[in-house]
Figure: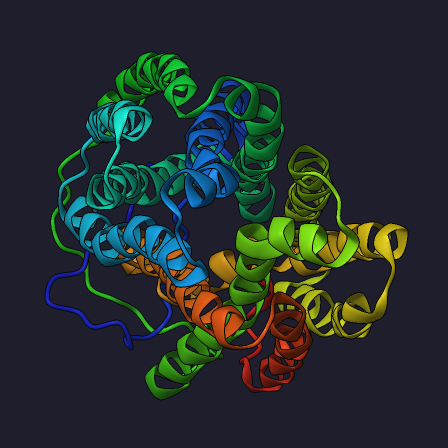
Length: 416
């Protein structure tokens, strides 16, 4: 945000701000594509490293005789760290931007990967996962701010470009695990620390671009947008958006964490083959995440949210009863549809409370990570007491929560 609106002692429920976060000159110039490409590629590297954690679960499970509940706790250690700290980071950078914090945060991921590669105790594995989560907590709020700053007014497009890097990086984790970690073992995870080092260099350069654009601003009063939602309606809308993100993220988490075990248990495929099937699902997520933002810019974010969550319901209900090929096809369709809502939900929330952009970004990225971690732990416990197949029958109904989108307010057209 070249000219952010700074508000002192405001609350999350204050009215929509009239002032746009991108000045007219920036909008006229259009998106800063080099910066968007750099922050998206950094997101790709960041999430590639993060996705390695879930991708090596079968190795850790066999090596250390872990049950599904313990696997879920590893995810929780990673996700909970990110969930707890992201809103804090966002709140702090709203008040005082930190252009080089991205590179410093990536250093935590660097050390987390090295520790995970050498860990021989369950507690050490949890600490390593938490370190990677710490890197994520620092990365997401400020990098989302930079993506919006470079958007040229095309906020949905910029958020989608940013999300594309992360989604594609997440999809690469299973492939790299199948090609490198499975054949060469846990120690080969250390090789990926070189990716973290590359990300540190890129983020340091982006920080140099970002630093000159940070200027001290005096507090500016908040003006109510004529025709915009009331403060009570804004608070209710934020709760609805959290619930919608819950339905989407918990379902994606169920596939990301346990799809490999589901395919192995039900169809008897090998670990490497199951990781390829997981890659197909995650790649579809990446494509859907990219398409959702521009569609929201064009048709309105509320429409995209409606279609992307409820539209996935028939396919999630069919997945537990499909064969191997059918499961692969359905996972692609589900990934394309359900992931297209991410950018629209985040930008919708940012537009509801633009004077708290960093904290709102941190809350929603943090909620996404936290829901994924907590959900993985709960689903792992449920799988231990029932079966993986039963977990997917339960999760199939999660997109029905998309009906709550009816309670979202209609934003003025110029901020849709």
